[in-house]
Length: 252
Ligand SMILES: Nc1ncnc2c1ncn2[C@@H]1O[C@H](COP(=O)(O)OP(=O)(O)OP(=O)(O)O)[C@@H](O)[C@H]1O
Image (cartoon, rainbow, N blue to C red):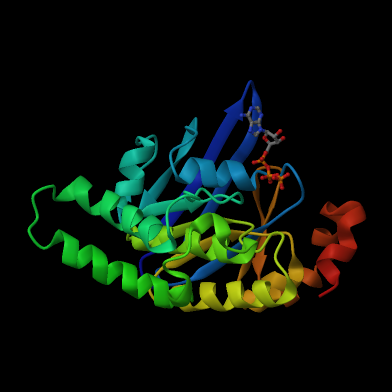
């Protein structure tokens, strides 16, 4: 087994004495997808917040590409190659699709090389590559505000990719999408996993099934179980932690 891209080791996060994460551990290999599920309040968002440096753990460590990033400032973690996409799109409605991608690609590169001669050419090439990847080539001159809900989500995923993030943290990327849009989003995530790693929170088991990836189940701030979706579905302990929501886990 190779070296993980990301290791979360025994992390504890407390809010006023309550442990939202309580000795949580998770390892993610390069170019892989991991789905994170768990009942409400299990600590999934807090885990993503901790990885990106938004909340500080009181114990444990987070290691990314061999370097400890625990308690590092959020902007430094982003520069190192981790990017989080929230459920609500954070795109600029009055700019075109290409302009939004251009901003994302440029912002990251200018942090590193303000005086680079080849910057414009490099940014343009990156924008073209991402437009194709997220399937928005024919919408590149459209205002982002005029896109459908699904297209907005793909644009935002594209912005994360344009910023050269190696690890993408996605929070319910297919929420509110039609059946077809969900399927396209799952295909996009599988395509992205050829070059990136993705940690995806989702509650929609039909969507999780399409991702065809290992599933980690969180409960009360820790890892309860890891396995295939099939193994998770057939595990009585997992059905028990979901209480009334057993059906959601067991039905495709
Ligand atoms: N800033 C905060 N201050 C106090 N408590 C918090 C804070 N953030 C989260 N919590 C608590 O920590 C626990 C874990 O919350 P978290 O949002 O990480 O769970 P989750 O698994 O993402 O849940 P959901 O699926 O409902 O989004 C919850 O009990 C929540 O109320």
